[in-house]
Length: 241
Image 1 (cartoon, rainbow, N blue to C red):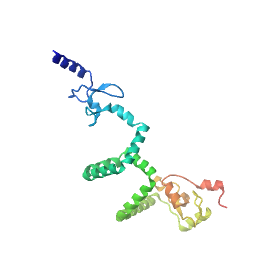
Image 2: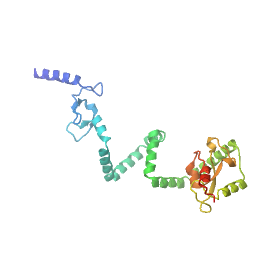
Image 3: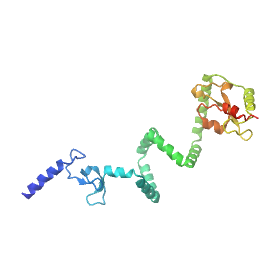
Image 4: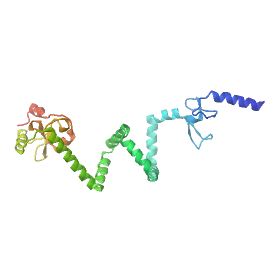
């Protein structure tokens, strides 16, 4: 009688729980945070507990892990165990080369991966420079090929864009602005002026002298493919004298 009653009660208990998998017949467990009794499939495994599961359900643990307090504690713990964590990571990377390639490909071709790399570069700009220089030293031939390809592509775009200017026109343009970089206001010979396309070739600009302004190399590189005309600022500030 007692055994029959126990089985009957167990069947009623299991039907009231929404199980994580169709074949699950567990009696469930009460979460210590939300106090709901849910299927064991909604709890993380934990070998140190008596029943082998965490006290909090997955949803509560995820909500807790997104708090700033939890993140601060995790960062502090990771710093203390950085050497051990890095050793385990290196061992895993060496033993799973194919999976590492797949992960790197997905990371490099996803918005989340690019955003993560951008945040890393902002936090550690010196590490990026060191890694880039190391890579260039190990891949000298690839760097040369890339430079040649980039130069050839730029020349092709220039030919398609049309227009040109002579050395005399360029010297006259520099003299008109007193050999000054129109962006940072430094002068030659402290800096080396370079011709910058106001409307970049990539955006349909020509190589005519009317589309050229003198900028130093750092300012020219920072401008990239933006359409910025610094000439009106020069005229308004009247710095030519």
